[in-house]
Image 1 (cartoon, rainbow, N blue to C red):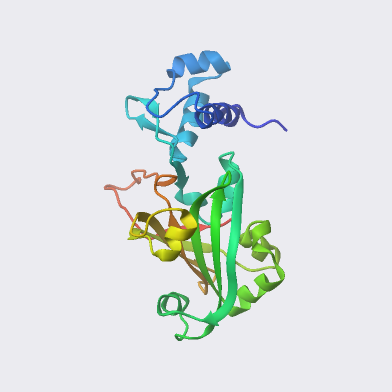
Image 2: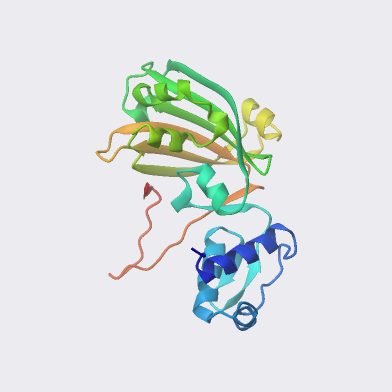
Length: 252
């Protein structure tokens, strides 16, 4: 079955941006011209442009023409739970290099999030994540032992840890994300190819089962010159606008 027209429009425009045919700062053609080019309604064009905005590839809106953003690739919150799925969605080749998978005592930070006593055995994963072969993120994941032990029979270099765990029946249902900025430590600098102390975007994530049991705590650090994050807000039906920085995501 062919993809919807708005998705095909988004794919073609995305590829133009990624190939450099529409460099950063370049305004996109008007909705009228895009409608003519793709033989599509303006509603279809708007849907395609909305997808590119969510990915952080274009800016503008509210009466301003869409403009190609810089080369950092935007990652929307609704896809944060799976780096692999997000990369494939935007037409990039995901990759990873596993540095370590080890059983050890939970750190203070991990034990607090996972509701364990400090030193309780957990499984730690340290992986360098890649887009088209370029390092963009360093992942430090801590899984409770009954979940993490499933990784000792899995090669994390072959693909998504979450997909593997889901296939083993693990109920990774929801996640809470906390964003901040940190200075690169020695490990970050060496593996991400940056200077010590360079600023990094950090996403700390707690993943839980459907009944709220913590299963994973992760500290992921992104190069801000290669990845950005996007959040879409909408005014609710009731009066006022609310913002909750503790964003919960349910997996499908």
